[in-house]
Image (tube, rainbow over all chains, first blue to last red; front, side):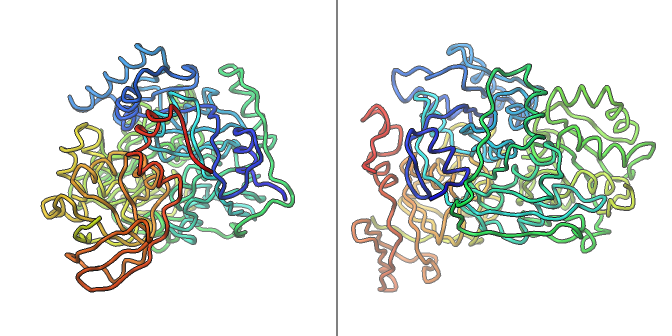
Length: 420
Length: 167
């Protein structure tokens, strides 16, 4: 019987052939925590007794969710992370380096064929470059830090075939919002999702990350794509950072899927997820005109160079609506530098935007950009839960960078297609 | 295991942001302190209503969203002995058993706020003492049962020096 990508990667890491529903104890290639989860990783690692990191080159901590620190409480956690890194000689990306989910692939820590866990639910992002990566809690991460291993239940796989050519002004964010709207927040719980089809092949690697990033919003354990030429070229470009060899994994022709779902995106309109759930999705037409107070472009979903470039093209030589706050956070220091060189940051500043340091920005409501009671935000992030941005009395809409940029110009939710 | 049912204002898709908001989990490390803020954004009085030994009762996909372990940690620190729901999201599911918090999957439609419940893990059933009815519960997978009986994955690790599962 053939194997899915998830079954193959897990088999390759546990030394025996496993299939869906089996339990496998696997070696993990890379693992990390961020500033919201590393505190408990450290506490629980110490509780394990007299242990050392199994391989200190495979573990990193990233300060991204809340940096530069807005409070004494957060500063204390950051300090604890720095002390732990020094004590054990493990890696730390400090304030301003970027979002963990951009840094892991960009700095060559993860390559095709890897098995990766992160103490952050959006660890599924690297599925876009053929990595079995999934979010876990801090205790799981502490166990892996000490042993280099963890146990996994091999997930069943849902195959999604995305066909067609995306219309102008419609992006990978619109594809994944549409899919989540169709299958629901619980639609792929515990499943591995494999994405295929001409629409995926047509996307840049940057854009593919957006899709895998949001696999968890339909409950999935991972959202994996094949490593095609675009992925291998992308890996080659970042090779200066990594000596690791990509090991692309393909599903067998007779692999067993729990379900196969097809989507045609040829006539897809820009999509918007309305408050307060990610699966509450409608075409932009249905929410167009809704007044906004803030627009946010950034995060592990849409803070990459091509996202900033798309937004800048819409904002160039224009001013945002005077009643709107436009916040931008590049996903990494490298992206920030690239955007500076390309004149993109200047476009944002001249348009009236505020550029924050690389990191998660106001996505999870722990730093700059917390909305007031009754305010409406349009954001490129992946979650719009009540209170997500720090205020349960605010309303969050999720959309593509183009839709967010167009909305910032108009002061209300806008269709980006007339700007591109 | 006996306890009283506590239903939330929201039934389905209770995410971990709702269990404990990001604005607390990034600045407070003490689970007992976090426990004072559980479910604050969707049910502000919940934390003051809940008592030691209670069960949370919910609908589908409980614990979806963020991987924050502060979610099961603060539920446990509030004295809640088990969460009973129709289904759970996977990261929360692992996290709960890893710290020794029991999760029960069953049809929760007939359980009301304040019902007295008794969970029987050997017979895989839940007795609603108030309504005098029996509900079948989905058997807890052997790995989770092992972690639960060892008191969580840390204790499991300390006992065996690694993973020790029968399967």
